[in-house]
Length: 346
Ligand SMILES: NC(=O)c1ccc[n+]([C@@H]2O[C@H](COP(=O)([O-])OP(=O)(O)OC[C@H]3O[C@@H](n4cnc5c(N)ncnc54)[C@H](O)[C@@H]3O)[C@@H](O)[C@H]2O)c1
Figure 1 (tube, rainbow, N blue to C red):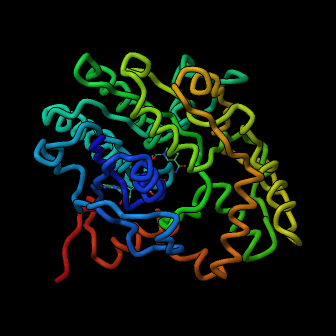
Figure 2 (figure 1 turned 180 degrees about the vertical axis):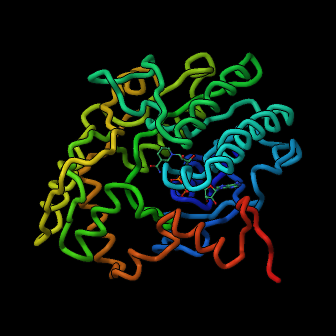
């Protein structure tokens, strides 16, 4: 299949493009390149062939950008709550309006399938013990609200000629050349490695579902390859039900995996984003999908990677590995403007 992946220069995209290539898809990329100057490691053997990439803001795409593609996997957005809260209006323009623009342009160009990277954060403060795809969305932030709005608008576009699949990913972890240390397991592993200490600022009681980056890539591949009738207009939470943890449990697993690491807890926090998610549907109804990773396996993998690349505190703190830090740097240095559009060198 000829697939255009948006966000190929980001954390998930940098793993997804080679994953799809290895599974015999022909992949091209589209990205504005905010985090291009952060590369945690080079792995030309494990991650062959970076895709041909068009550097473009998704707010300016036209149908011509999608000519000749059979499918689109759409990842490119401002990718977490702090980024979204930083400039909520810009977040709505990129994450909501920009994503809807992508879908319309793709459909007009004759693309047959779009896989959208949504998020379990749409559940927000879950009232129920376990939430599933039928639970009401309760978004708490601009980022999560945009995910809900994109799902609503794209669902209305699904028809016989245009298959749309929504993957509500749990919080990801695991290695990527375009690493993120602003997501929980990656962050805590980096703290365990560089400081040998995880000092939690809260009591770590909130629940978080987490999922390995490879399991996300595999779900995206399955969503691309499944018969349209099995997935069109469907929402799938992506993760595994056993992989719901309290944050303090994640910290404890990491302390066991990184020798000599201490963990201390803080007082209860006001953060009310706590939810446990059922992943029964993806396990039983997304053809060929199976989530393979556990938090412990992921922590062990990161420990091996950090040893191999001699991970330092400077690397952990490098701005490009924390999305908000990088965008603030690009703005402060005049490289992008208030709307997060590139200014070009002057
Ligand atoms: N990583 C996670 O834990 C997680 C969990 C659930 C959902 N998701 C979703 O998956 C997608 C990818 O996440 P990620 O972790 O790889 O994020 P990321 O921030 O690493 O990558 C996003 C990419 O999109 C690009 N981008 C941002 N705004 C753009 C614009 N206006 N035009 C063109 N490109 C733009 C960035 O340059 C970046 O390369 C996002 O939509 C995110 O919301 C991620």
